[in-house]
Length: 579
Image 1 (cartoon, one colour):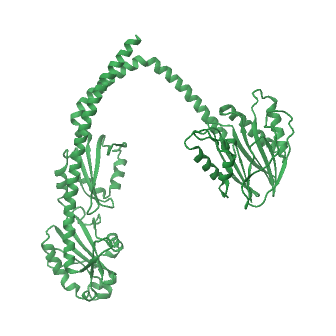
Image 2 (cartoon, rainbow, N blue to C red):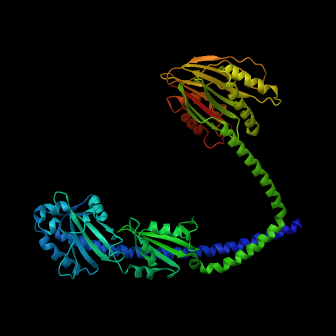
Image 3 (cartoon, one colour):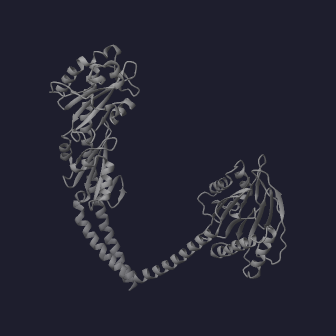
């Protein structure tokens, strides 16, 4: 029976693999063809629009070159300016010149001359109330007076004035010309470099939609295109309804709000979007002249029409194969499922234990009248055996750091007991050695596995620090003007090994801004990929010149030394800075 199952599975894998290879080949060919067609369509559209806009902007600048003086700008583009002596006579000839210009350029709706108020008020006081602003149409007998239009506060006018560069912009959404024209703005300067005003032409783009529709690679319904300007405003689109959203951002917000888009994922160089319940392919090209962007969306069903039939055959065969495999592997899967459930339960319990363990620890930062405390703890596993703690009682700051032997859940449980005993003892006495003795005696009474905890207790009152070291790593003392040095402490047994062990106190007079860094051996015994240890000397080097950032400097040095090698032991730091 086992051999039959193996043969059936092998035959299925070979057959399905062959079909998948055929499908992959045909899909790749279809994708290449679609990408080529879409790329050509976008390139054609971008070139067409770029040529149209370049021709229009070139015509406008040629006209201005005949009316104004010009000089090279910072980017090599011409800067048009009017000589001071020509300003008074400017209104007399500009209207006739503009009308002639529009008559030989039938694609332009009209042209505007907007003279900055600073020039109008100084030079044209008797004209239209001191504001010179005209719109000239090719067949209109008289220009339209725009003096009532507050162009000085218009966003596009001020942008051209601020950036001093020519640009294509769309009219405001409430304009009668919206959706029918785009405007080319050219800044005009005075001879002394001050701002004279803006020249604008309105280019008819009503035929853009027909141009887009003629380039759709899969026809209306299977392909959609929209064009945005450099600020994300929609210039034109197929379908036209997208233009009602004004900007690409509002369009996307509405599409998401209506639930049209489920998710977006990347495949190769293309972006695929689930839109209107189907999958679409998106690509884009830039129109350099106006910094427009042309977006194209094509329905995947239209792209892969020739492949879909074969794909359904493959899916059907794959489903039958999956049923056979499920029938043959049911017992194995059931066993694996049970094992995974058990593993998940164990992991959940470990995570819960880690959360409980973290919740009993003191906050990582604390301000006392005499000192500032900063702590950091990162276990090697979900739950660890390191601990730190502190409390304030009657003006005394009592703090500790410890490292339980072993790792994992046993060490975590032992650590929880030590932490609880520390807080109980610290509420009864200010003597570090008495705290250590009390914890040690409780732990040593019933400790068949000889689990122990290295421990340091300190009590700070004013400038006097009293401490007791139960077999723990020597803390580092950092003083201004001195190199970091290990604090000398008398040797004592770790907690939990021998009941009644005589612990003793030591004292240290702290100066202002003295720093005492306590740590566990997860710091000095951290190993790199070659199993070299970080060591005590590197710790002193890492702490040199790190006033106020001792914890961060230590962690950075250890992480750089270890690299990507897995953390081998719990890492705990407690920094006490005397005020």
